[in-house]
Image 1 (spheres, rainbow, N blue to C red):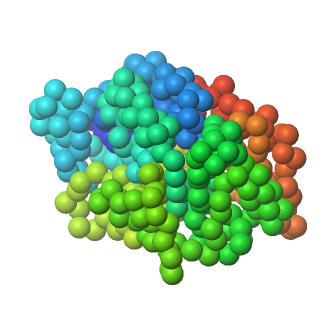
Image 2 (tube, rainbow, N blue to C red; image 1 turned 30 degrees about the vertical axis):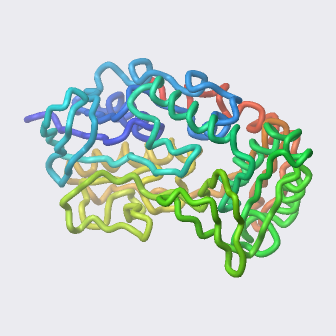
Length: 378
């Protein structure tokens, strides 16, 4: 009997960990990992790159050090199509090839806006460094910066700008304006009022201007200098950062039954299988399910470990479901400030002391544990 063929598309934290775990657990499987770059990066640390807090080398590791030798690692330019039986790819050398599979795992993540547009990092750490250098030059030259959205990404990015440019913001030499759709506060009502209030106050103390109950309308393609609001405009904008949420980084496919939501994220069952194709899974950011943060990566992998084997064996009565566990959340607001909350059964949540968030996240953004984040040979 031929060895089962498993293909993973995407060499981010979720994809790397899945490929390594499946190879270790089922040595009889032929596991292939399709990667469009030769490195992995610590996503939580990316928003500190543009202000010079980290270098590209600081937050990356070569795939050659991460991926198990038995995994068939293929460097690609892109996936041009996939279905239930095969992936059609353009290799790094420019050749079109077909990679067959019995099970396909989508782990291609999201597309973010500048200055953390990871889809613009390119294939190497050098190309990533050039992108960051370009974004940093724009930021340093900008007099007026507008951030659209104060969810976690916008909040953390604003905190980095406030810390980096505190003197320029205080003197009025530089201006940072944040626009958020929620009334009167950052984040949304799912977070503690005390956490939201602290976050808002920290930004205001950094001399960052906050505009609530508004949505920014900015034409990025036209490279505009105007941000439109409901009944006014912000003019002479040098730089606009869209932090209203990512869109899916889904490869091209001719599968008509692959269902996605409004932002292109793949709809999955609790088993992490796509709705209409039981041998295609979607893990991490690319799926539409809750529980996609890096802290859930091992849970995704454990579900995969059982369910891939069940699909291969045909014993689908033993499929495992992914369950989202209430976990603590934490946001850095620059390297010296942080906020967070932890769930309390039956009582909601409690605010975590801020010095703990600074120690746990803000200072290093988990980069001291980078090998655990980007993946490592099991």
